Image 1: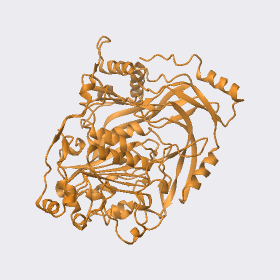
Image 2: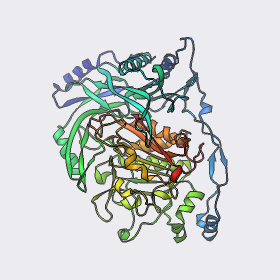
Image 3: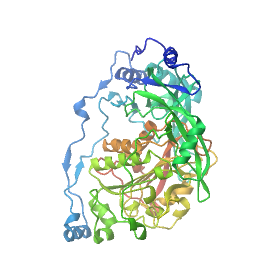
Image 4: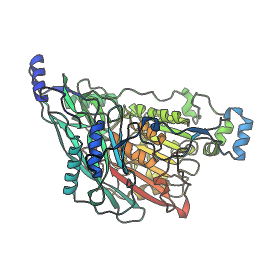
Length: 604
């Protein structure tokens, strides 16, 4: 277990010294905390495993050797092509592809430095020391269980985290219970969910001259899930312990933060406020300082309906986004609004007419493709551009073709509706990030800067929905749209809003609450599925690592944040364990009367 020989003086004493050297601290002066770059070290992970597995202290977890952590061997394997695709390739040599390199199907491969003990695996991320500890056999189990009471669960989790030294965040840091949530599933038509885990999350606050300030973000807390009889199923999270004061900074007022944000984006706001936090990056990213930020929280009107903002962050001193700007939306010719957009390859080469006519067939049988649709700075989200770019980079690294990348003013409702066969339903995997509510996610009206939406009412039963051509996995990284009466009040059943989208679609992944803007979800999800995690687990793990447990909203959009997956199956729950193409188990499309839908949720 790590010893805290980080600073001879307490954080409070350091703050006093800093103030003495710079003048008396005022209500507007806030410390910048220096933090250990590593949240959890190997000794702490070993202590956790020993505690959870109930083994004698002499028993040692096994450190998986680094040479076993490399990716599975690539092997050439021909792709199946039907006669129509072969004919297209003969007519247009530019459409030919070299034999796809596919990963030999294999079981889950842990990250470097993973510790194992029995059925438990503990992964430590090298960049920031975040921990992902799981019981591999009981993760997302369909079995009904008897769970401990909330009070008992809190004591179990506190005991486990103390055993690993994870609640030792440095002087001036306090950990409290931030949320008590659950993992559960429900079938379409079932009146009650089956709760499989109780999750207790401990989050950190830091002492400042203005009083305690909560730390938020992926690296601000630890969430522990307990199952049957209080058995620990998972430990997920990070907090880099405070080691001292790096300096101080004069922060702006909340009103100034709200005014700066309003000036940067043209939306009709219904309400807007700024809340002071310290922001901690996820445990798979490097961080050496905790700086004060303002979370911009509120909602805006789209066609007369309220849409919650995806909460974004401004530096509390400079009042600029804390996110590095990502690549802008693709540039296309000015007359693009007079006609439909053309599909492009990664190098910008446009496809010919034959490809446009037969895109769905070619995509389904001769290629593995992904696409991105996103709303960013046009609607006040600075993280979206980098978020989608991380996703697209992961697709490229996997050898998949990036079929399209429509963002900001070029992200249109028709991509999901009238022209879905050309766009969202022409790829295997689609990543959207932007704003959403329980019944919609936002877009832009073509040829304008005005907002628009894809609504559940636009997807009435009987229309051509997603998966009929190619789409297997749809991710909506936004503030919904899966708010559900199984875990939050003031809303209806998520099935009633979204069951009709399934027409061969396997997994519809998202959230059931307001979430936080970031640049990490797309990249992290692709890292995990490329490592061999199922689509379901990769998305749930990504959310727990990136999003905090609470958001400060009332029902139906908070206060607890839930990550969600609604999937279709024929009775075998295949989609719960499905890997992306070439990485393991695949599932057949399910349509019509044989289709069942299940819905999973888990507190982040």
